[in-house]
Image 1 (cartoon, one colour):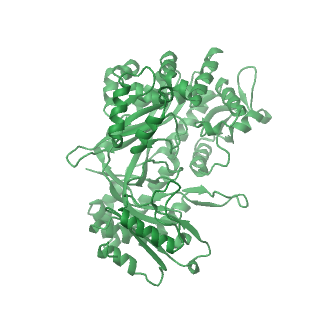
Image 2: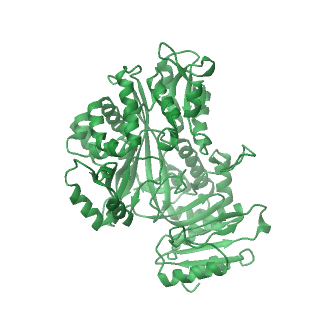
Image 3: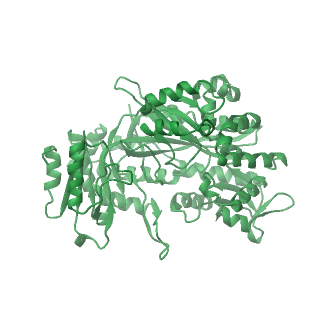
Length: 592
């Protein structure tokens, strides 16, 4: 406790009867406090680990490691990097509270976190924010709470509304690029040479178009992801695009339900004059509970995304047909998908059937007119892919054969393989070239989209100035992110790993990657809940903005903004996927 402020000392000493072990891991500007409540408080024991957000000083790290060793607790990961030891915690009785040790704001939030943990996680679970348990073989009903922030994340209202207005423009760009196959194939040629997955998707696209595109209507459910670039206190915050997702743009249902959590938490506990209510209002800089709710923008993703799928279903116009959800086997993120399925039936009377690619290879067929049919003759109107974005979804030829069958059919695809290819990192980087966006959407729309472009550089054969940008990246790797042609989180390289990976790759292999400017957001303290525990720590957020589109290349039938998503992660954590275990879901709180 000599390393910590009285605030943290109080945190350690306030419940001496309940805490049997406390480890303080001091690093440059962070204290991590883990309290372990004995098994008597719960019938279930779990493991919980917290990784420090700063590189620990060597001497203190050694002391912490020695402490962990003496307590027979694991220290460090498989790469030898320091990690706070994992302590056995007791489910919902656990309190894991890392926080910077300075300032009253952190103290207020820690008090709020401890007081409101149980109401927050119970509201979360009772409103559908769930993941299936990792091992539910004996009980299919087993589930755990989806990781969510207890309170929303503050962002400038101006920046929020600016990127909302861009949604229809992204739709227009995706459709235009997908219809320009010579440009699309040429742009991806280098990446396809180095990346078999990209090459196979292009092969599917070429086969479909070689025999004639049966279904020109394409449905897009896109999500453009951004971070708020604020490299200095003097800089005006502005959103820079991280990536554009064109397949399996997930977390829409969870984002809507998280907004409900925050609306409840702010409305129920942000009014009144008790210390918790006052602390919440002070944290957000408002004077009343009413103003708290006014700053929480509506999120209609769970209305607009099902409505877009239903619109495509009606456009297909085949009585008795159904929408097909292509899903991964043993999908843990079932609730995010099921909410869309239920909304389709309850709001539009559109039935949904769920199948994996391997199941479709066995059960699906295409009749003489090109109509996609499942076992028993069930016709499919719309194919909605929640799988198929990763090589892991294609363990063998059977899955690729199923994908080709779906693409060749008359069913409307969401997305088509061409839309999926537009979401490749290489396409994102190529569109940053002068004149590229303008080729597809005109100079006025292009100028609006370019306001959120981060620096992007191509790699591999044929890329101009490759040697120069590699030299710059190796000299200052913290300023760049190295990205492969992959979706789903956990694939990028950051910091010194950028330089290491660049030196390992051959010229051909580099063609499967792009370099992107590293976006520098300003951290703010957040309360994050996961698996019944709570953490208070400096955090960063990534913001996703959904859009829906339906068109046939000649006419657009639907093009709208369709809601938003906030994913919050601890400062110092590079990746940002919720399902991948890096982040929690939050909501935007609009400030001036």
